[in-house]
Image (cartoon, rainbow, N blue to C red; front, side, top):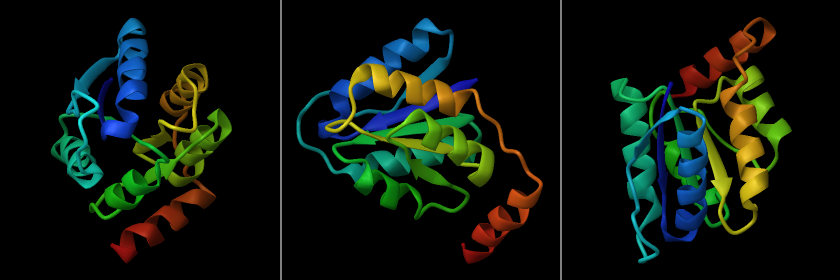
Amino acid sequence: MKVAIGSDHAGYELKESVKGYLSSKGVEVLDIGTYSEEKVDYPDYAKKVCEKLRSGEANLGILICGTGLGMSIAANKCRGIRAALCLYPDMARLAREHNNANVLVMAGRLMGKELANWTVDAFLNSYFQGGRHERRVKKLEEIE
């Protein structure tokens, strides 16, 4: 599995932590930035992660900003992206199982490292259930 990860300045510290966690579990990580706490614009990094998914260079994406709100909004502007802001593992699991989310968004200023790791695990270890959820995801695609 290959995961593209990106953050703005407010999510940088948590991104670095999550990146290390993923690597320790044998997950291939494509870090598209930012690479410091210098102020940057979150839409730029959301777009870069989404491009990695759309091109097939990554299977899933992770985005982190201060609250997760900006990254969620930006990522969901991209065709084919279903980004879910998840603050807890159950949210991440259900986002994958029910919504076929392909981008996990987290809040660097609201989540600790351990909670973030649990949330990442739930996201990566869950799969779309299809069935009754399939028609709803198709409706989301029709909106695009």
